[in-house]
Every structure is written in C-alpha cells, then in structure tokens.
Image 1 (tube, helix red, strand yellow):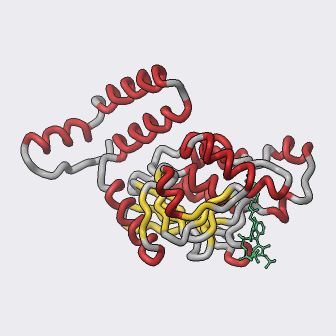
Image 2 (cartoon, rainbow, N blue to C red):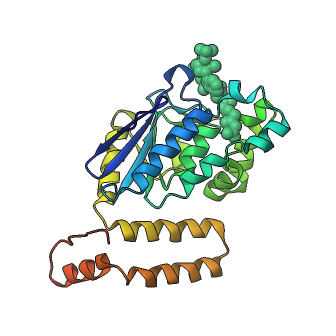
Image 3 (tube, rainbow, N blue to C red):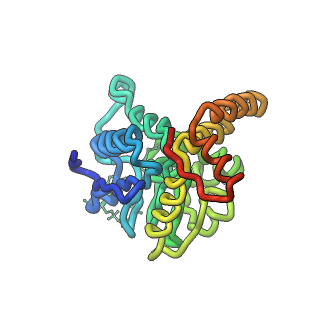
Length: 258
Ligand code: CAA
C-alpha cells in the first residue's frame, strides 16, 4: 500500500477514506497535497471494492485554503507554465461518488475542494468562505462557479466580494450542505452515508452522479438528453436486471457492480 506525506488513506469495507494531514498549516492545499489527494482518489476510483470516497480534515480545519506561502512567490508566467491548480480537475472527474466531510475551516481552496465533492456533510463547527479577495486574488479552483451555482448570485457575490465567513447553519439553509450534523459525530455520519451509497450499484451511482453533474455543466435540454442516454445505458448492466428482479421477488438486490 502506498503511503503519502500529506494525507492518511484507509479503506473501511467499501468506503475509501482520505484524511488531509498537514495540521500545522491547517491543511493548506499545496501542490504536494493536491498530488497526494488526486493520486489516492484515483487508486480508489479504479478499485471495484470501493463504492464511495470520503475526504475529510481535522476538527479545526477541513482545509484553510490553497497554500499562501507557496503561491506568494509566483508570478503570472509561473501560474501559466505550471498550470497551477489544474491537477484538481481530476478529482471532479472521478466516477466514484465522493463526500466531503467538513468540520472547522473550509476556506478558499478548502471550500472549493468541499464543493468539488458530490456531497458535503458538515458538522455544526464548519465555517465556509472564499477569502481570496483579501489576498488580492480571486477563487481559482472553481469557487466562483460552483458557489454561484450552489447558493445563487446574491450570496456568492456577498461571500466572494467581502471574503466573509459563513457558518454551517447558513450554508445549510442556502443549499451548500447536503446534511448538517453535530460536529462530534460528523465523520461517523459521513462514513455511514458513504457506506449506504457504497452498498448500491456502483455502475448506477456513477451514471447518477454524471447525470446530476451535467445539470451544472449544461443547459436544461442538453442535460435532459444526456440523462436519458445515461438512463438507457443502465439497461446494459447486470445490476439493472438484478435490482428490478429483486424488487419483483421482494428481496434485497445482490449487486455485482457490473
Ligand atoms: N496557507 C498557508 N498557511 C496557512 C494557511 C494557508 N491558506 N492557512 C493557515 N495557515 C498556517 C498559518 O500560517 C499558521 O502557520 P504558522 O503557525 O507557521 O504561522 C498556521 O496555519 C495556523 O494558522 P493561524 O495561526 O492563522 O490560525 P488562526 O486560528 O489564528 O486562524 C484562519 C485561522 C482564520 C483560518 C487563518 O489561518 C487564515 O485566515 N488562513 C488563510 C485563509 C485564506 O486566506 N484562505 C484562502 C487562501 S487562497 C486560495 O485558497 C486560492 C484559491 O482559490 C484556491
């Protein structure tokens, strides 16, 4: 098993768990963290024994943003030639459902990483924000797009232009959060939801997340067309026959994820 310098990785039954582990920097997301998270997630993604991936941080911080110390040395040409942050795109492209399990600070890139996941389970200690404006920059890992789609222009402009922090209850009310739970049981709850998802057909959950994600990426008519063809493709799978046969026979389905 591979070990990584900046994250802890373990598998619990059908759930892959990635824990950001740079406590001294509040899990700031430097290039090494990006490479570690993406590499570990991609290993889980091609492993049929993994049906859901949870990404979490610590009680104090999910992640306090991209690493400001790393970025402070860079100029425009560095950003272009290094394709800075582009590696994160691979995380949003996983086929396996992903859950961000958030306690404490989810700021800047931390908020963007959480929004990149398919579901966001927050403890009531979670704090969200896009404070890049205070550093003279703007969000760079999709925050201006995903936050606006998640909570609308009025609230996204408020957060991105002022850099203000938003507490978990407001984020939950606005639809940024899938489930809000007490901080001390947050990870347990997230792992429970992940296990529930991982118990379903992985081919179906992959199609489902692709279809929902298309709602973010395209207009309604195109999205509906894509959904229809993904829906049809489910009928090429064993899990569809099994799921429907099990319903008719009043028993639990035995999915093979094929
Ligand atoms: N990058 C690098 N180091 C960071 C960091 C970051 N984003 N956030 C925190 N740290 C470091 C601090 O420098 C400090 O290290 P030292 O002990 O070596 O000084 C350590 O983590 C602990 O942080 P604080 O002492 O500041 O802790 P605090 O409890 O007083 O404050 C905080 C917590 C409010 C989150 C504060 O750390 C903070 O404001 N962090 C920066 C938040 C931020 O601006 N994030 C956006 C980054 S830009 C970005 O993300 C761009 C993008 O779109 C991807």
